[in-house]
Image 1 (cartoon, rainbow, N blue to C red):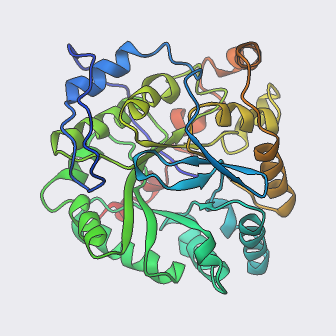
Image 2: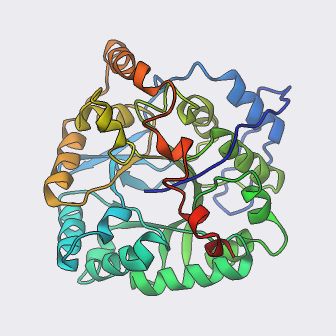
Length: 360
């Protein structure tokens, strides 16, 4: 999955309301103020996962679908994480996992330019031959912060994925306080991404991060300052996050207010949450699905793990308040210092920290 890093920030916010977004889905169409973003987030920490679920769209082979925010695209409740698809000893096993997921009713595929040195994209591109590309809503990510680096990574991802269009491209690992400013600067990565969108290489634009909800808020506020609205935002949403430096409490309300697609990741903290022995894999998945997520992205490195995720989606029913409270009560003590959310508290998951050259 993804990875990020930074310390929390404090901002003054006098206006708790956000401007209404334009209905236009173009890349530059919002006038939401920085104060508005941060003010609403500060006023909405009471939203701890009991908000309305993302609009149900349909079901395919028993897999529920939800609407991806303002894009109006329909995506499967469970999405297939790309990082784990470059780890199989036999590349054909990676292909079997991807194709089985698509055949079983899943359509959301996650990937990134840097996963496993590009191997994850290469394997996914191979799996999407023979008509499978038409079954998929394909997402990938880039690390580049400069226009040149971003443009190069987009073209390389397209080649590896063997496609002429990526459905959703996201800025990966927005984990530093200066990432938003670099991306939106003159000659920054946004220029390359918008040009790629105008050329038909990508359809929608989002960003990801796992380190600090305050950095997410800064990214959203910086976008608003530039009259830009993201189509999606990806972040950790799980039973531990609810207690510690929480994306659920601080960022989720802002996304819902502005009809930005919510991509939940790390439902099990890349397995680390399971080591706490406070929640089962299915409980972790159901908790994330119970939030107003458009899709819950989970790593599946084998067919049995894939089938576990598919069954969790098929068996999901909205959790009652007592069920949510019970899960949060079980995980509260283990979550309080972030020891099971290493992506927030260490550099363990920060790929661009270890490889700063990827930023350009």
